[in-house]
Length: 182
Image (spheres, one colour):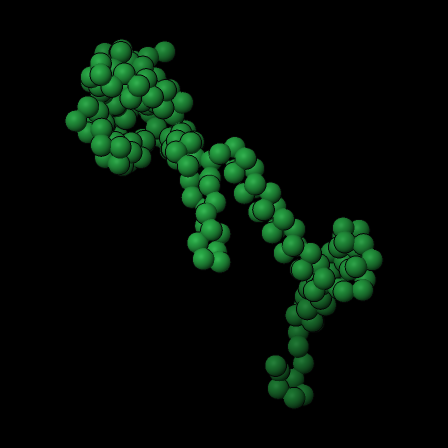
């Protein structure tokens, strides 16, 4: 605040007036948007009503998303005491891993290479591993050698250890290939 008797420069006064007018314009447009969106309730309840409606809308959207995930069998709900706890199913874990593999950024270390030698007795495991790699964006270099330019090493390493596949599967970075898949 200026001292008593001192005056503000005219440019500062004009800037303050313009800022107040700009904020009033934003509030005016916002008010009409909320009246259009929330109708007569906005007039009766004002911004508090709008905030409550947004909160209810978000809760409804969340319930719908949970219902869709449960319907698709990606999650299961379990009542523990008075709380409902959700957890991923095997299908949900698989879908999450595939999504993470596909969204992984490009590797700065070259290619992520997966090699495996799964015994014939574990044919299902081998087919599932190939399916996971294909769905995750990997390309087959040779029968049991798959590569991607994405940095999926940390994800695959954790997955292989968690599934106890380390005696059959190896993951590493590689740079120099005589021929890359098309």
